[in-house]
Image 1 (cartoon, rainbow, N blue to C red):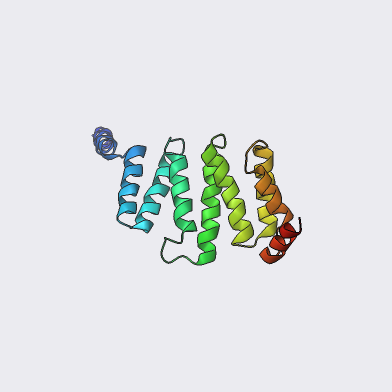
Image 2 (cartoon, rainbow, N blue to C red):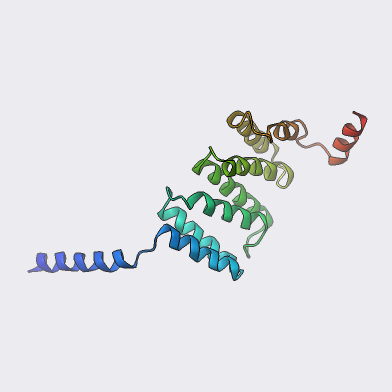
Length: 167
């Protein structure tokens, strides 16, 4: 009797949870509704759920990019500037890892290097990230920019301008 009850209970739970589960597209659309209402924390949480539940989804890279952009723009309340930037870097790198072969992935990796160098002043991490970018994307038009960034890590912007004007 107990075994029969357990089987029926499992069957009922499977039906309830199976019918009420959201798809990756549902999560993505829900997150965008939060974005349009400027409910950024809810949007981030929904994008994170999408990434957790559907890491192979065609929406995963877009979700990671949206999260990175929100943190980079300091739209998530209650997060310090440094933590926001570091979180942006994390999700830009995730965006690259999800699909490194497309333009979005390449741009996201470059952006993570840019934030590390120019906003966080974490020059060692920036150099590694730019070097990774150059290795992964030797034919990318931004390769030259990454090389210039590496050459000028930690250099005062005024000195860079002076150097360029002398050329």
